[in-house]
Length: 471
Image 1 (cartoon, rainbow, N blue to C red):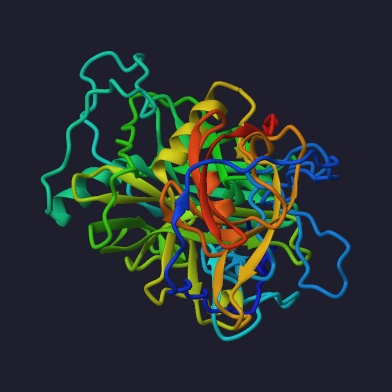
Image 2 (cartoon, one colour):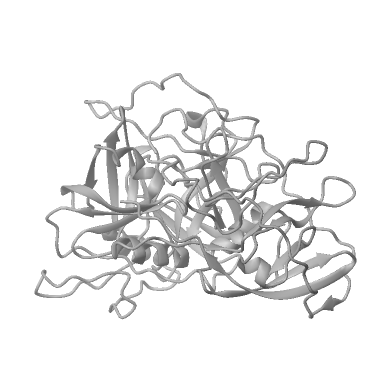
């Protein structure tokens, strides 16, 4: 979160492959019978910050590397980890460090993991972006706790299309999260989700404080409070903290990311590079964009189906919301693509990425309730499938199927190439992980796959990785 020299590794930018344009064969709705297969040794989930135990948790899709030295290597996709060959290169955004007089110190020298001229940057704890939605505060008794996670909460939307009024109404729900620990210090952003001080943010914002560190929260009314971590989920890069001795706060209105449209206008509000209460606006540029971040080894990674926006967000925007023109939070800003050669050079070039709010709401509820956060999985090992030109991505190739898993029960077999999930194109193993990450265990999805020359469909009821308590 607050490593000035990027805890996440950078990878050279590889342009996303274009989908094959040749006509697809006719779909055969029947599943082919599947012979019994030996149970593969599938590795388990790991976290985006390295907190998750890679030997105990599996991700949405498990990707392991079978011994095939003369072929293109594949690897397990644990908890948010995508295939090295086709993932978007990412690196954690540096913090916005501070000195005693409030001025940023000169950048420290250290490890450089950013490679190439263009890189995805995860917005680690800098001075935050915010944009929580308007909330009509209850009158009278401040002891009544109101939560954004309560769907029955009485809310008041800002006037549609009025950026100025939206900004004025969302600011009370935006906080700056200041974190220190492990010899590091920085700040990020949070969204107030309860009137008694529960705050949603990115896990990488508070990660350095998880081991005897400290957190303080600066509110829009210029007050400050200490805070403690309620729960963390490195797999989805989300966390909930709670400010001490606060009541009567203005919770955000959490919208829905299910019905977002490309071209829809959005607003980001926060403190890029420490410039608090900065308002930017733009549009949704794309949906379900697979975005991944990892450390140098690629073992600790989060992958999510991002909402892409051209609203300017920069270092320090981590954990802050992206809002629509009705003042509703529709995403948690978490990453940008930048052409900077070092983390401190990184800045907005109009390519920002937010965690969909529907995913954030589900995780937040589990964290607030003290539950294990469970993640959906298929139970297959996959690698990138490319066309004969060795460049064009055409799907996620199944390398192994875990016996008894959701994929096994649905009839998936080795060498099948998954091309769609619920009708949405899958052009890489990374895209498959991101897509499944947006669902919950127990949900049923329709998977389209190619077996030989035939295109088939099957319904998969997703498994759970069992979850892990992170607090």
